[in-house]
Amino acid sequence: MRRGIGAKMIRGNRIWKKGITLLGAAVLILTLAGVLGGCSAGTAKTGNTDPLWTASGQSRNKTIVISDLHLGVDDAYAETVKNRPLLVEFLKRVEKTSDVEELVIAGDFLDEWYLPVSYPAYSDSAAFYQKVIANNKTVIDALNGVMKSGVKLVYVPGNHDMTLEAAVLDKALPGIVQARDVDGLGVYTTGTKGNIAIEHGHRYDAFSAPDTVSNAALTGSDKTILPPGYFYARYAATWVTEGRPSVTKSYPAIDTAPDKADADQYGAYLYYRMLSAEFTRMTPKEGFADKIFNLKIAGFNGSYSVEDLYPVVQADGTISAPVLYKNFQRSWEARQTANKVGVPVSFETSVMGALGYEFAASQAKAQYLENTGKAVDVVVFGHTHIPQYLDLGNGKLYINSGTWVDNNTSDKDGMTRTFAVITKGSSATGALYQYGEDSSVTDVSQKVVR
Image 1: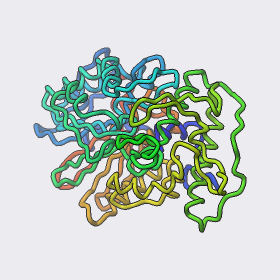
Image 2: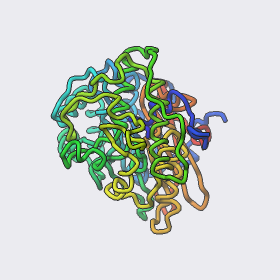
Image 3: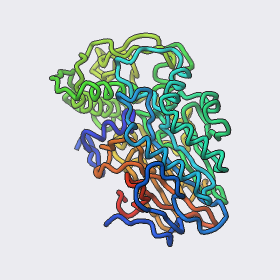
């Protein structure tokens, strides 16, 4: 449930880290002897356009993966402002690095979710994204420069940009390859044997995966797609923008957990526990019943409150939100089918795992690395904002590419500006790096969570 309902929730506490549910080395500077073959760490230079590393040969055999850039529409509350010049510098250095074949943006590129509720309602998402593009022109220009240098640029949708239309991106970045399979989702397969899979990772997250099912009757539209994470992201952005006020909140409580044998109601209870914990912790000035979410996109055309999506005990004794995402747990199977989830995951597992980085790693293994029907050796996800390097042995590797937001409070070390580099060959290899404020390139594969 990252970043939309995800990373924001991890930021406040890690109540589900390493299997705890709601219920119950030194940094290595690249030496060129490893996956890159060379590195120009150097000292910081304004507008540095040196190659990221010294290419070991003339062949373009490396794939760089970045994710969770979260470029916003307004620098007053956008999450990537301070790091934006460093991102531009990084991209200009990618342009000069001669053995890079492709640069993959693995989701949450342009951000439509992290908006305070005071942002005016709009009915044209395409026009909104064009404003985001205009506000981040230096990054767009640098990406066009990357393509002009001969590097293939690939985009994979994330949850914060799931409504971004292909035509909008094509206009801003002519020639970009867009890996899409379902609206709001995609996976990019690459490698000499097609053995590298790259996706954002929100497909398996009940709070962040596209939801064309739960609110279909309410919206009367086949365009409905926004999951509950969207509403939580707006709420969190509001709280942060207001200065993180501490406001006493009183929400309806469900004191007794249903029997675990009742999977339907137990799932509804877990959903309630998650929202209860986070809406209690995030305390903007707006009230429980205030109609603060004014929407005219994705099938919505009205105003909604926290009360509208907050699960309570209904008159018939069942647990459900009254308006938005009614009986949310019951739509999960249909959503997974619509979202082309290869190996279905239970609603309970998805809800319980959504606050921890382990869930993303488990899905990389279940969907790809341990799936005998898929000849995939390397998987790269984003979404969690927690950079991770996990060598499973036998040539199997999972990397989380992390994020470029200014303040990564999702990660215990606050690590940001991370990226993955995969070297193609008969057996693909990879590592995780951080781009420093001093323009250094540092191998953090052994430092991050494993």
